[in-house]
Image 1: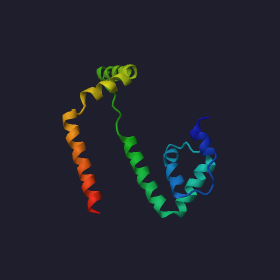
Image 2: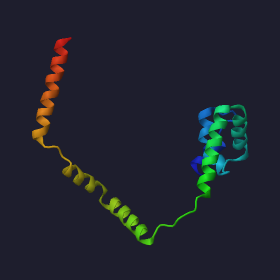
Image 3: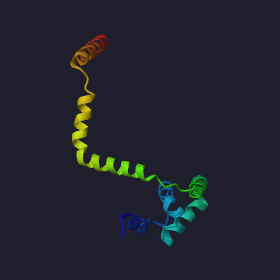
Image 4: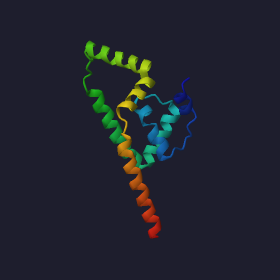
Amino acid sequence: MSGIQRRLRDVEPQLNHREAKALFFALADEELPEPQATAVRSHLDGCDECRAGWVRYEKTVQRVRTVEREKAPPVMTSMVLNRVKRERRFGLRKLHLAHNYHRVPVEVLIPLLLAAAVAAFLMLSAS
């Protein structure tokens, strides 16, 4: 049993707004066990704000379901999978290399730090 299913089983019959909205996805996919689905529906019956949110959410889900599914070209699929493998293999090393490419020269940092220190001193001495 997954963590979501365990949490859904333990949902209290009286839901607040946040809990009801968190269960919208499972209600739309008809994945909620009957007691939780009943609890969400009873909350929607008594709460205009959540009912309006549910109507918008349900319309969005219905629109997304009507969109025709496209399959990615095989070349694109292999490119993405190769990049994922490369990221897993060289993730930390790549991060270090990115740091080397985006370093700020010391010649720029020193005047900025001095200006910040002078500004802080002037602000403190003015008060």
